[in-house]
Length: 107
Length: 121
Image (cartoon, rainbow over all chains, first blue to last red; front, side, top):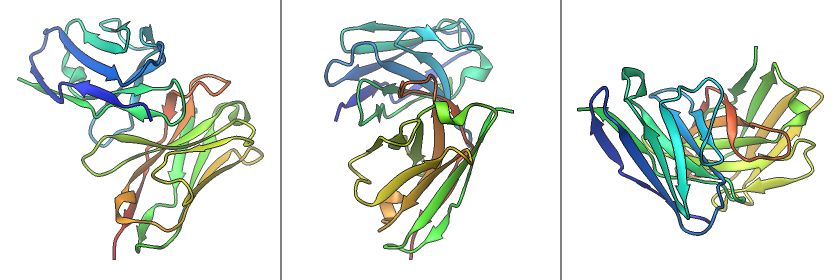
């Protein structure tokens, strides 16, 4: 199975900060990577697919990028609604795998 | 309204069985591959299983292969997960999730609220 290593596991930030979360794949997944946001007690929400395509209705402050097997989710200016846990997911092949998650906390 | 609604969770003893269901509405169910994703309490997301739009192809995580069976009834817009030989480590919230695009794109734009399965004696 393809392993997805996500970092950091926790991130403390303030409203207005630029934050970056990284996900590294154990082998090439081309650009077949998605990012999700999850809030406590809720289902995940799709933010980004194909590494950098923004899902409909997702604010433009969210962006994704890729370089080889390293993928990045960036929030350009953190808003109060953005404090949540973020997961990457590779979909290059079954078995699908998620990163272990990054919790974005209020500093 | 476009939605997925899971049911069937509950408390079951180790070694027991449980069948989860997911009722879909608001989209052409038969056009999309469907999935089960679980989340153990306080832990991350784990993909469990997928089924093609017509039901002819199924896929499983190694952790559940041989114990869980995914199926669908396109005439009733329903997805199911039959879980046998349950273990304590299967305790989780189980989410039903829809592929974003037709053709088994394998990432998910619609999720249910989840149903909690607890495996304990």
